[in-house]
Each structure stands twice: as C-alpha cells, then as structure tokens.
Image (cartoon, rainbow, N blue to C red; front, side, top):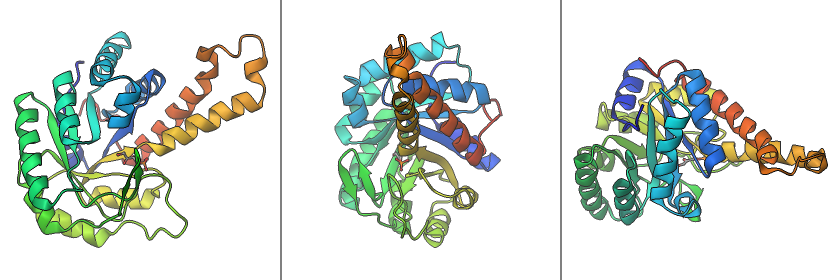
Length: 290
Ligand code: 13P
C-alpha cells in the first residue's frame, strides 16, 4: 500500500476509541523494525521524523524515498503515514515537497496570531497535496532536538482557534514532556484535556512524550479524545540497552560479530519489542483494515 495521510487513521481511531502510535525513525534499522512490527500486528502506523533526524539521514527526499521503497520491498499492506515531527515553517514545506504524507507544523513558540497565520498557510499547501497537518498549542516540555519546551498546559480557547483552521490533528500541552519523566512528575492534566476536548469537539488530539506514561493515564487520555501518541525516547532506550548487552557479552568479538548486520540486530529486536508493548497499550493492534 502506498503512503497514506493520517486522516482516515485518525477518524477510525476516534470512532474505535484507540490511538495510533507515531514512532520516530532515525535510520534504516528503525524504519524496518517499526514497519515489520506494524505489519505483523496488523496495525496502522505513523513514522515520525524530526528535522534533526531528517538532517542526520541527509535530507527529506532520502527519507521519503527510503520509506516508500521499504514499504514496497517489505510488502507492507497496513496503512503507513510518513509524518514530519515538530516541523518548522520551512521544514514543513520541504517535507511536503519531498512527498511526506503528513506534517506537524509546530508554531507553539510563536505568538498565537503568528501561529495561526503560519498554520493556515501550511494547511493550504498540505491539503493541496493530499497531506494532513498537525498543529501545536502550548509547547511540550522537555528536550526535543535541542529545543527545551516549558511544559505548558494549552489554553482551550487558543486550541479552538487553531483547531478551526482546517487542521487534521492537534497537539496540546497537558503537562506531558519529551524524554523520561522525572520522579516528581505530576502526571497528565486531565482537567485541561477535558476542557480542550470540550472546546475542540471531534478534533483528533495528539499526545506527545509517550515514553514512560503509565498505562492507566494512556487509556484515560484516549477516552478523552487522544487519537495519536508519539513515542521516541523509549525506542532509543530499548535499542541502546540491547546493543550494550551484546557488546558487554563480548559478542562483537566472536567470529564476525562485528558485522553491522549482526551488531545492530539485537537493537532492532529491542525496538520491535517496545513498539509491540506500546501498540498493545494504545489499542491499535488488528485495526489496520477496520
Ligand atoms: P518521547 O521521546 O518522550 O517518547 O516523545 C516523543 C515525541 O513526543 C515526539 O514528538
């Protein structure tokens, strides 16, 4: 199946009371691991790519070509969206030109007026190309590619203003942060989520910072309108741990254990393991065709 945008995925997730996982990719191994897991579990999936990861992989076109070709070569039949994560205004335009099927324009650090203006423009371009748009209100805390957010709780009135611009998904800060949650984290602000949901109606909501959010909070967030959940750090942690174990066991020194195809294999399995755990938690397993 060719790349799809996130529109149908979000509609089905909202109606079916589950969330689609958006997993960040960094390279071929990441992409392969996530696509294989989605296919095995018959789950729709969103591949998120940050601007930093795009740069690391040498550009939007390389990423779009790799993902499209891999969907074909791996016979992936579940719906897959290729989504720019936390895109800048320029980045979103470049990703769309390169064939991304979905973009996040993160205008949360602009004034609300400027966020509205720029989001409107990106929506127009994206929709003319058949792509979907996620916008953000209230910056998500933690560190994302060197950008430290303040962990704001989004204002429902502003959410409604952005939501009315024809966007397809809305990321709103509700006390969530990127990266691992500190021991004294207060948890998600469900009152805020409730108010945002009341203001924005059926707009599919996006929960960033999916790493380490306990299952009961994930389930409650889904019941309050969250249809897409982003996970990045946890895949990195599983990859790193499996790779470390392999090296600490001295396996890279046995026979041809230094061959990258062998050296990176445990990490790939680690990514598959955590993607499966998350998909189970999000309730999206078996939902590819529904
Ligand atoms: P984590 O790294 O905390 O999983 O967050 C991912 C994310 O929200 C990407 O936008």
